[in-house]
Amino acid sequence: MQELKKYLITDPEYYSNELIKFEKTLTQVLTKHTINYACFRDKTSTNIEELAQVFITTCKKCGIENIFINQYIEVGKSLGFDGVHLTSVQFGQIKEVKELGLQTVVSCHTYGEIEKAMGAHANMVTYSPIFKTPNKDEPKGINNLKVAIERYDIPIIALGGIVSPEHLELLQKVDAKAFASIRYFI
Image (tube, rainbow, N blue to C red; front, top):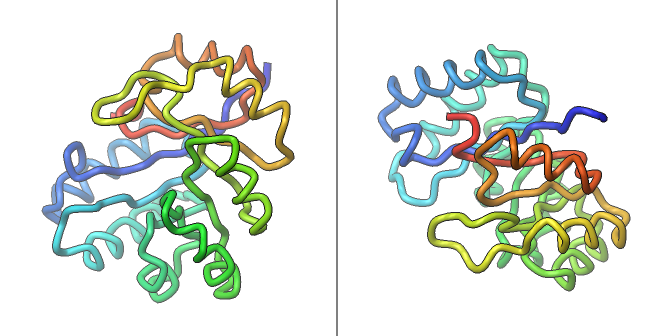
């Protein structure tokens, strides 16, 4: 079986929004795991640009090649991120991101949203939540993920509630190529 690609997503609840602690925690995670994609995600802090700068610098120091920022298009472009992970309300900005020369990942929660992302030529999508996760809708489950993988010709990254090796085994059984998580890597 092919090893799943790993997509790390940060959250201030686990990483902090204090610059030194953020850098230390991120460095520990990046050196403990082989990460294929990394995404700076912070929807609450007031020092987003400073944290994003620490994030991209730390990722580059650790050899990460695909560095994304969640939702902040201009910050992503100005700091040299490789791409933007757009939220499910940012479909209309896929073209804008691509015109800036950045890759796009779009958060999708339905098959219709996957189709919409494909129609707008997104590079990848996340499909979520697969498993139960705090503050999210009912999980899609592994069978719906399998249908999405088989039905759509776009890289689909499984997201949501992926916290254990058992979850990874289930993802591999449905031929998932990648998974994204916050808590799995902590």
